[in-house]
Length: 241
Image (cartoon, rainbow, N blue to C red):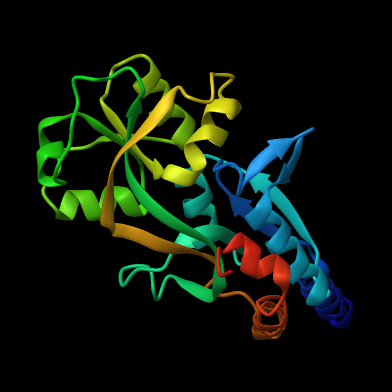
């Protein structure tokens, strides 16, 4: 019997040691140039900030680029998960532990450049058109609350594919990012045009952690973020200059 309990103790201690030393799962979605994939590696301006934060906190992470809905689900349910760049909303406040902004977005309606038949003067006018948003994205929440009937996709590429094939009229994106998305999709950089901003969708994209991330790791990430947020690189990525 003593041997049995000793074995249980060994297994329990081993499990604790494994959890403590395991790499963090760092989850994100495609959003060039903030988050993209180059040579099978997740990179981009916001990604580099997150890597700097992890390095400063002496933590290691495995970066994975996923459809937003999948990344969001895993981040909520995996104890060792981080996610970026996620908007901080009232609904999400208690679902995650918040570290700090690593991106800024001024989102609005984006369409194909040749769509001269579309001219928006107000956000309300866009309700007459088909708009694609990603599942669990801030745009889905806000536009639905504003009375929009949206087309929900799994990720930003799917939304843009619907736009390119004229199955919808608008996607939601940042004016500064649409040339990068065109490049990502192997399209001319002038494929898309920004039609109208949506002030309600001017948001910061945060680095956040699963709500059950160990306190020691969370505090290390917070401390590292505070240090990195004073750097010139941080100011450039968040357009603070």
